[in-house]
Image (cartoon, rainbow, N blue to C red; front, side, top):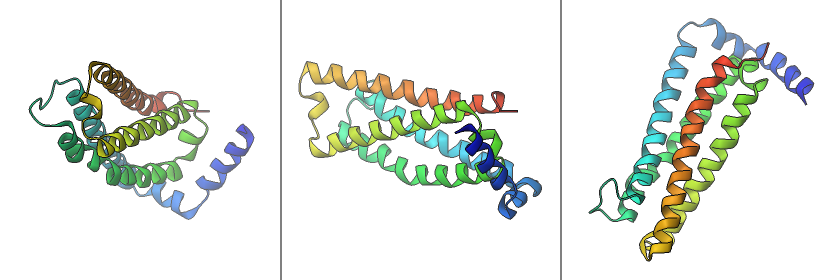
Length: 167
């Protein structure tokens, strides 16, 4: 697997798109800036909903309203993250494709996206589901805690990629 990823990295690095990304001095900093700002939007939206589940934020606003307000913003911004992240990988393929921290980040991101989709879907299907009784409130808080931990893990792993480079 490592050999295949190494070959893919070499091939990507030799493409004209990769060469352009590598040599035009403003492209990587611009992509990184957009990527980081998009991460901030997604992280903030998810954590604000999690804080509402803890009743630490907008206590007087129903959870479905908070969900509509913030979770809806996640999906288009995830597309921006996919685009900028993909271009950053094409520009510096060895940095990500040969780095186990990158794969940790991707696994955590998949978990966060699935958890967010489940949360958003459950709130849409049954607006009072997470607040009906004590057991559901506890379960909601546990999911919110897990969500915050996963999103923080994504942030840390994303930052660590620069320090755990292959080669």
